[in-house]
Image 1: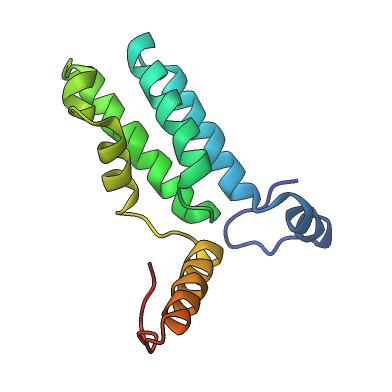
Image 2 (image 1 turned 180 degrees about the vertical axis):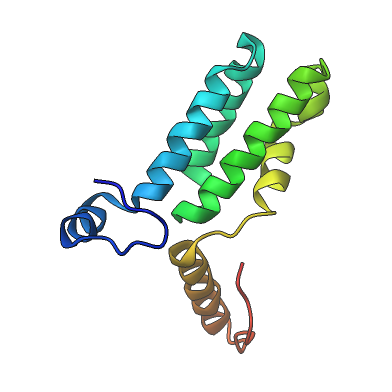
Length: 136
């Protein structure tokens, strides 16, 4: 059922991806989960908690989210290898850490569009002219 990178997808795979999403993203996610599973327990618990938070508040598009999760796995793999204490990774405020971490990744088209729509509506409501290039 899989195709090579230079081989066109057959119609069945095209329809399947319409229903389930890109198969390559699913493969990347499974690889990410396998990497997390290999972490020492305390690091794995921290990553899984962070992942739950990111599922609710992080990027919503597949490729942006996967890039973020892969970087998260890299960070915790390196930290585990160096025996960096978890508190040193997160600092004193885990929310500040995760918000700063998420700021490095795209929000996804839907969230960026809705943020722009919301801020434009507020600007109109207070009588201000909306900025031309507000993406956050």
